[in-house]
Amino acid sequence: MKKRLSLQEFKRDTGAALVTVLLLVSVMAIGAVVTFEALGFSIKRSSAQRQFDQAGFYALGGEQLAVVAAESLYGSSAQLDEPRPVSFEIEGGRIDGLIADASNCFNINSLMERRDIGTYAVRASAAQQYRRLLMTIGFNERQSEQLTATLIDWIDSDARPMPSGAEDYDYSGRDRPYRTANTLVTDVSELYLVRGYDDSAVSVLKPFICALDTTAPAVMNINTLPVDRAPLLVALIGGDFKIEDAVELILSRPGKGYDNLSDFWLEPALAARDVDQSIRKQTSVKPRYFLSKIRVKHFDATTFLTSLIQVDEAGVGRLVSHQRGVLP
Image 1 (cartoon, helix red, strand yellow):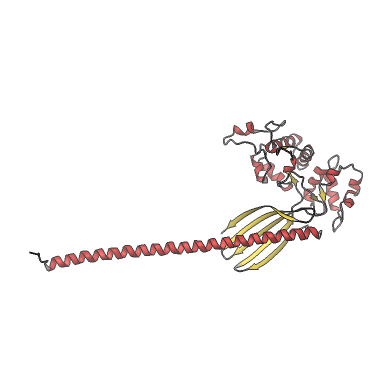
Image 2 (cartoon, rainbow, N blue to C red):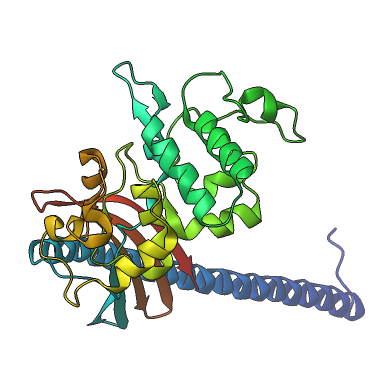
């Protein structure tokens, strides 16, 4: 016979069921809140990612415009004594950029000559110029010899250290051992890995050097070479040509620059010098490399793109390298 519940037992069971239902409702409510918060965060993250992606696309578009601008500047023989700014309004923000002459530097990769078998060996003439540059900007003869030798050993393909140089053995005993690159330098910051190139040395040297993706010497634009980079001219010409001569030559440059190289090499400070034709080819009256810096602000996203552009003798530009940076 089925037992009948008393009123007290019925109330107790009903209360327990109600508590259980309320507990389930509370858990479901908390779960719903967490789910909606996660959904909202996901939506915000997706929106932010889209903004950053779009800002990146705008930056790449600006980079292509910079290549076209470089070609135009080269073709018109325009001088870039100062960087040229440009700005565009876009949906949700703007694009700000500038293009500057990046020709006036010593290409540290020109210390090498590329052999037919794909190896790298020292280019004696460039090594001599590099030593002169180091001495002109304040390093003594011994320091200049060591810094030149260690950099050559870092890039060249052989494992034989130059006098005062450094090969794998010199780096393998460090706390964090590593080997020489045995290939071209990709960025000037790589110098910190080379023996002798500490913070002090690199900071002094950095304004005068670059690391182009070629072993060809950088072609100096004598129409835009600033006074503070006169040591580049001293390193190039050599002999008894001193920093005072280079400064005077730059300061006496025509206001609109030289129309052709012949006028430059006929200057009194140079005309009587026997300068090899290979040296003369390292000068130009037009920029050959351009530096483009682009900043894109798109709603809450900000992105930066720095690009190096080369223009060949036919006036055709190409992108050499670029570096991205993204800030919130």
